Image (cartoon, rainbow, N blue to C red; front, side, top):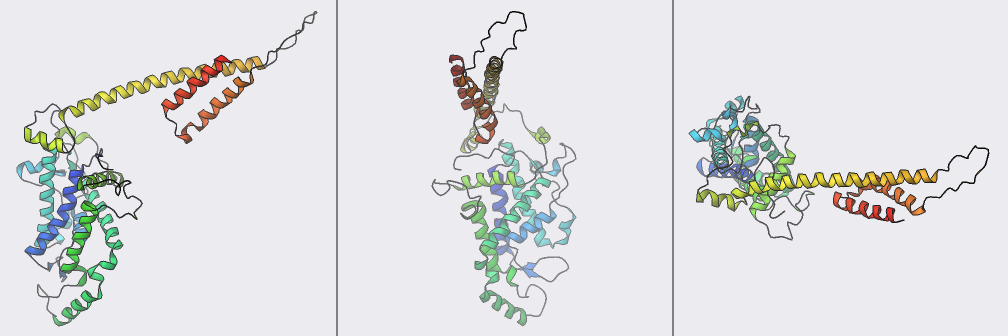
Length: 376
């Protein structure tokens, strides 16, 4: 895991800002407002913890994909050039009071600003808001699992908190900011969730008991960047992304002149201007070498097959001479080694996929078999 780079459409930097901003928005809300009304038309009062904020965003971020590649308002980032956020929300946003909407807007603005700069630095392409919604749903699912793992530590489930707040609820019968906060949305639970989800997405990754736990994470020193890279790859595999590459129309030309500051940022994440050109050259070379190997392999297999057909012809006795003078015929038997070599070739061909034999090993084996076949 350490040293790997996310090769998909989601960079580890985008994962870092999307997940960390969930916790930061909740932290700012704790210090700025205290408990507040959670939904228009209801009397529930409390703090917004990370799992709750993820659910609100997952419901309110639009699932409508861009109608064309020029519809920049439907992507996360491009509108930030004019300090805008585009059109990230659906009508569900209107069900929440101003403070909750302010929290969701704060998350969208901060993620949009970072997405804009990641694009300018050629690190992350712009992602449609409809695909951002899928990532939020992915985070929501992973967060629920994390909270369930540690449910015995959850302040909302501890009797000491439940007894205290139920008593406050009995004393305060009014409705408003002075109403007692229920255990599911108490301050202690919010702070506890922030810690647990920071551990999950940024600091510690999934626990060791999780079958997805990255191999080698315990034995090799790792950083937050390594964990973020693993999550970027996991998000890529866990979300059914449908957007194509047409949105690359926002891309600048590949030969851009980089300032020293930008170069340092790119080098810090393992990218240099020459790297893309080198990668293209390596891909072309690998493609050509693969084609050459396939051609050589096909010729060797054809030669062995011809040898097998010849062996079959020699093995088949000639029909008796029907002429008046009977002449003795000599049927030279095929060498047993050639028959066994032919059987071995078909056996290797049959088992090649299940053995996961690469082309190089297969080529070497068939070449040795050809030499043996011809020497017998």
